[in-house]
Amino acid sequence: MKQKKMSHNFYDFCVELIESRGVKIREIAEVTYGLQKPYLDEITVDDAETAVRAVIHKREAQFAIMTGLELDRLSEEGMLQGPIADIIKEDFSLYGVDEILALSVVNVYGSIGLTNFGYLDKAKEGVIKEIDEKSRNPDQVNTFFDDLICAIAAAAASKMAHQFT
Ligand code: MG
Figure 1 (cartoon, rainbow, N blue to C red):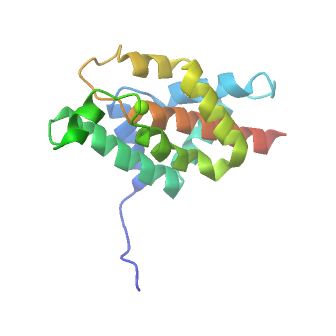
Figure 2: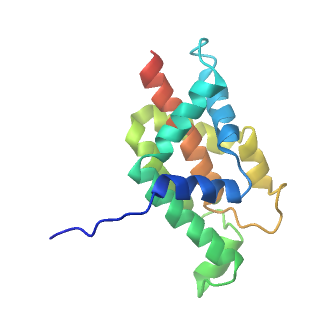
């Protein structure tokens, strides 16, 4: 079967999507930097930003970002129907599909990605804490967003671990 060619620049779209929801790529890079600094003392925040952008260039990451953030947006606009509407809007703690979707971002980078993701999900460092507490935009639904940002930061940290050691 011939696949239809997708002409969109998903990378630019995803970067704009993330920044339009109040998080700068640089801030994700700062989280990544914080994760890797204890192990790689030569690295800079610029290196971390390069790794973050490389992660967002991956199709796996782009599809997860576009899917998750569209669900958050639909939830904000009250467009979701049925029981899932409240589950996503209230970020029901046993839902877990948000974490599972985000795992498709870290999967690309092996087990260090998974460990970093689990750590960030608990420690909620830097901008991740702000997303979780919705301190920047209280009306925003961040159910998928918080996990995706954790996953991007974690995947980028793993990429650096592979690259610089
Ligand atoms: Mg979540």
